[in-house]
Length: 104
Image (cartoon, rainbow, N blue to C red; front, top):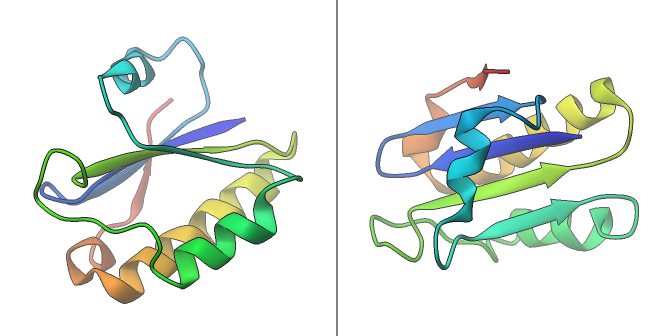
């Protein structure tokens, strides 16, 4: 399983594989946006990212998102996250200039 954090005002995309990672603990903030991409949701979620269903802005409700990618295949999870990042970057140039940083 891969958990990725996307931050818009401070452009970054970080990938986390270790469930004990302290950064993942931060995802528990109130009203935190999160998306799960797995075998049941992949088609719907990829369409949502492509169609800009998820928006980013410098406001508390839209400034960040946690994305969980769960396929029990780390290479495929990395590829799905890379695709999602490209979709987001198409609409948000701030995030286009950042690479996915692997943290833990």
